[in-house]
Image (cartoon, rainbow, N blue to C red; front, side, top):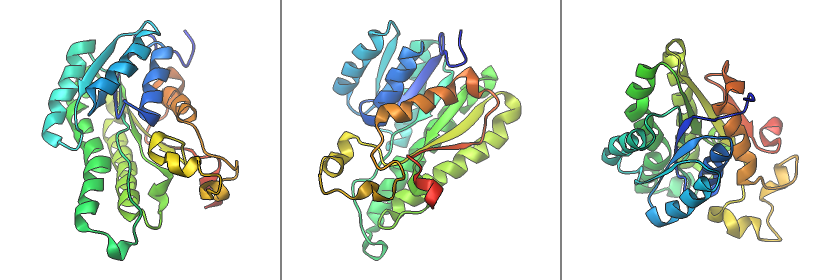
Length: 251
């Protein structure tokens, strides 16, 4: 066994049907973990499940809209029932589909992004807390964003992700003495289907302020997620790990 080996581990990943979530799920499977895949689309999750199984690992498909708080406890229990228990929980579901000046922001838009990015992470963490604490082991990884440091025209998204960072640190302090680690992964500009129109545009200037001068890939975010879940990070909790091509170094 290596320090980055996840053999025998059981992971629960939200937003697993595409982008960073899919990459994390597949990286976990490649490292030896069985994976409960959570997203709204059962059909797309089925495709990811086949990729997980190609690594010789078990995949559980759990359709769930994380914006429906009442559906989350059942989804967590389904993951426990399918895999036997959970060692790794990744709150990855999130995003923003609009840019708007704050004075023009509709309050319904604020509420939507809070439910998707912050409330969902809180609700999954709350639903799985008893299971992890009773076992006295496990790790919770919240995916936030460099936007948590502040982002114009993304105020709601930025505020929600800053909340995710605070949630991470608060739970880490509560649970450290009880054997459960909680850390936060903050991706920078990452090329996914959601922002394809930007990174495929030859005139795009999004990464002009990124020292490495390019977009990241979902796989480049997934590798640090493996690290945070692995024995290599056993003495880490309450930490915020930026994977952003150096973007926040210049902030």
